Amino acid sequence: MPANKNYKYLAYFLIAIMGFGLATNFTFDTTNLGQFPWSQVGTGGTGDTGGTGGTGGTGGTGGTQYSAAALQWTAENGITHTALTTTEFTAIRAVNGVFDFLTLADAKAGDSAPEQGTTQFAPNEAIILVLSDQTDPTGGEDHYDQWYYIPELKEGGVVYRIGASNLQVASSSPSYKYTCSGGVDTGQRIHWTSGTTNYWDIGRLAIIPRTDDVSFDQYLMYGGTTLASMTDGATEIDTQGEQTADVALTTDIENLKYYAECDTNSLGFGVAQLMVAQNGKVEEMKAYIIFSTNCTAISTSKFQSEGWIQLNLGNLYAEKAFYKEIPAVVPASGNKMTLTVNIPIDASAAAGTTAYSAKIWVNDMQIASNVGVGAPTTSVPTAYGMMATEGYGIQAVINDEALTTSSGAGATQTLFGDWMTPT
Image 1: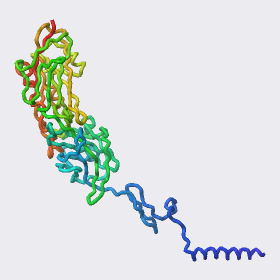
Image 2: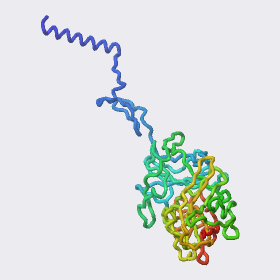
Image 3: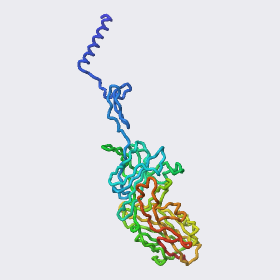
Image 4: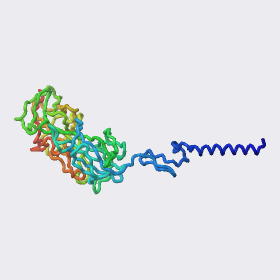
């Protein structure tokens, strides 16, 4: 066959095949063409923004579109983990990475679980929020506030619980401003909740219920002997005539003991609190114990070795006094809170067979610098800035007496006892 005829028959064959395709409406499967660079078929996005259709294509379903929305949370008892519906909520947002606690972004008195705020927060904002509750728990009084930090408001974002150590001063004039970092991971993750109203759900946030004075039984002890006790929250044992018993130390080096317990289950004591001062400064409040004795020959180094700090006060010249931070006591659900503080006595340099005094003051909600100059308080500080609207969860200090001085000696103590050096 001539060569030109071969080309002619090949052309006829190709035309026939194309005609068959047209007659049967044959089409290519374009399902997966989106993976190829030349495809113009829309496939949809998988990230924060949905996919868009290509030329001649159609947009896919795309990812969730996030927008500014209010916060949503569930407040819970941090010991029993039951939901609370009477909490107060306060929040501020960072501006250029800096927090000004004299400002306020959102505040809400709660009445439900979950609870929703009113202010809209945009994706990726950094937020600090405070949860509090001034309602008295069973057998207790008020709740200790908890501060939380959201470094980035986003789906799956982390919620941290923070304290004073997580705040760094960014500036102090004309008022204090802070940056924030770190914290304790609460295990809560932020989730976008869409509906008629969209929310940023930040999970379950806990606060700690506190004991009250009446349930907070306190004892000054030596071994198994009680020198003095207060179990009604009101009757301080502040004189020698009111004490339960005198004790004689077996040796020059012994230990007295401060012991406290709560009558009611599932209540805490001494949880650190943050306060906002009038100039925006954030300070930490904790529980402290003060011990004073007229045995001025008592060893200072013995106290210092166990974390006590001496109070060097000009108006406390007839006694030697020390103070110490009391760590937070938060029992497991269903258990009673107990607290023991060792009081180390080294009377080696003191006169033998001599009676000396032991005085005890215990207060929560104290600023260390105030205690260190002998000025503890029985009043909760005024709330300023972001805390002014809803206030602190704790409304009163335990106990209602704090260290004062009279004639060079400590006065208005909670507990008083006598101890005697050996022969």
